[in-house]
Image 1 (cartoon, rainbow, N blue to C red):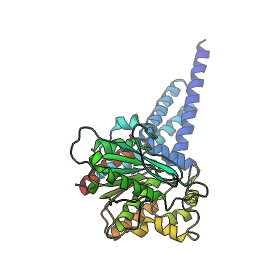
Image 2 (cartoon, rainbow, N blue to C red):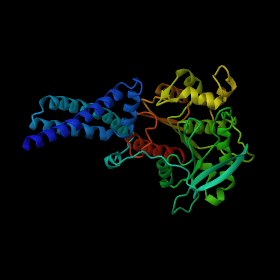
Image 3 (cartoon, one colour):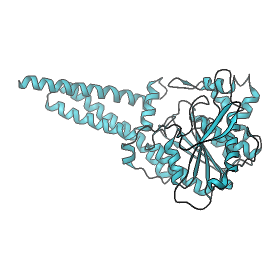
Image 4 (tube, rainbow, N blue to C red):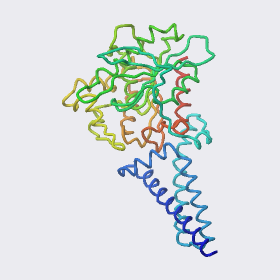
Length: 394
């Protein structure tokens, strides 16, 4: 009976250990070799969202190795122990580098938030939804989130969702919405026309967002907002549109889809934005099947050679100048969809043009690193954003 019980324990323990070894080795390889197809994508996105959990799993494997020694499972105990040590150290190194970035930016990390962090994706909140325009038969809505216990004129912020210009919806990033509401801002989380087969939106999406700003200005008294303090923010495709709209309104090249007065933003917050569509087309990026070239084909309708005027309009690198508003760039160093090299080049251009800016790159982090509000990258981003906006909007 004891032998059967002991054998049963060995089987369960061995199965769990082998499973953990396989998972941890796969993720370890992905973290340190991000260019390996699929494996690199898995490793970097898990490291982005669940950094602490990887260390915890490695420690658990180490504990299992000790138990296996007691059960005389020497070979598996040895493999488990070595894997546990290597992975614990290996996963701690990226965390250490993230903490260095946090320290450089005076950002405090809550390990409780990181431990209990979960992916945070939202959708339209119909109780907050308001139609701001109808264009080409498309009703365009925004979700409006208003802070409590504020009486003075408040800062309006236009929040723009991502989705490769072909997908996504308002209120897609509720953690960002809550962050801005907690700062006392009124958040206008906007929809815009999305590209689909035969329907490009390179000349429609940004004008739609500008139209939302027209609507906000027309209803500024109702929501007690100061349009002179307008901010624009977004991530991925939304980050691109934040830059397109922010820069286009400041240099006068962007017009809304509907008539009315527009207001230029005081600052722009762009999280892993697409800022140079021409380069993205030729780099051939891919992230879990999300193809940068395919997105641009739908959004613009062809290559830079086929659609030079369209690319000139949406490449924000061509709209940087004296009127460009202060810009915050939050990016991941291991971004598979929008390469880090492009973000670095964009920051260099902003510096050359003497545009006030802040550039924060999160080590070992991929696209969507802020999908979980408690991730280390997200916590750094929130605190950096707060400091940046305090500096340029007061």
